[in-house]
Length: 70
Image 1 (spheres, rainbow, N blue to C red):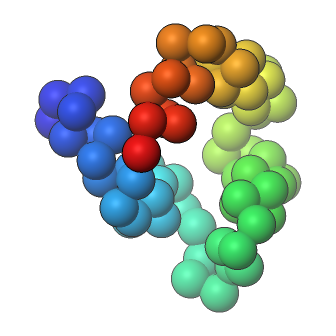
Image 2: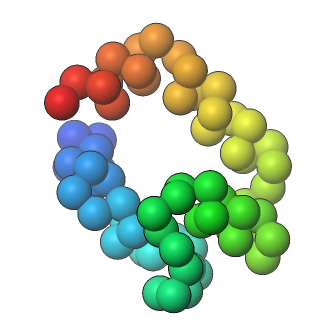
């Protein structure tokens, strides 16, 4: 899957994309993304370092431009 297709899938249905890699129960409240992050941390599916890396990428101006371009 190329980066553009991945980006489109993420925008259209983020839970479907996450479910391809992570075990996330269907009854989790997805209205707040922090619930998903906390669940993944609590179950050891991701580490705090991974969260920190993602947050620093989120703050990168290049990524901001990509994801705010609606």
